[in-house]
Image (cartoon, rainbow, N blue to C red):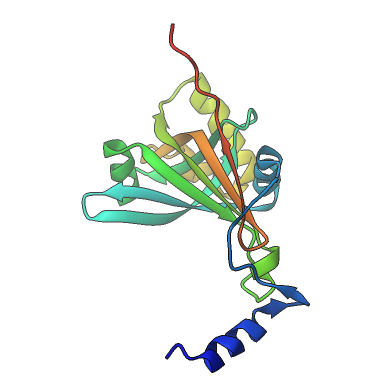
Length: 180
């Protein structure tokens, strides 16, 4: 079913607002940390990806970026598969995007994939600081965050991949510390 006529039709339709939808990935030049900060201000939820014994799991979480932009904080019930998965394998990724679910998204929407390690924060000064930060963005979650059946999680960011304009990709990595 890959005849020239059909491909030609697809190519002609691959235009949005007079701009062609790119067919190849290109190197981007986005200020990834500035975009991450803006996404934190404008978006309330991220998709968390964990790995369990039956395979990958994607879950919606309410998040906040730490003030130093080195981590993402969210809360989860301790009875969930995502919590169990993170306890067994702390490597996670989060996807934050700006889509509005319309055709302009192809060229206008942005997506940020954040890679890192998740760690449960136990009660104490750091817990209070991060819980306050999360609740300041998500006031409706105050009782949920404080519940004894809820874990407060911090993802230490190791790498971010920003994609905008459909296939323009910019990558940012934390600097590696050298061992002495």
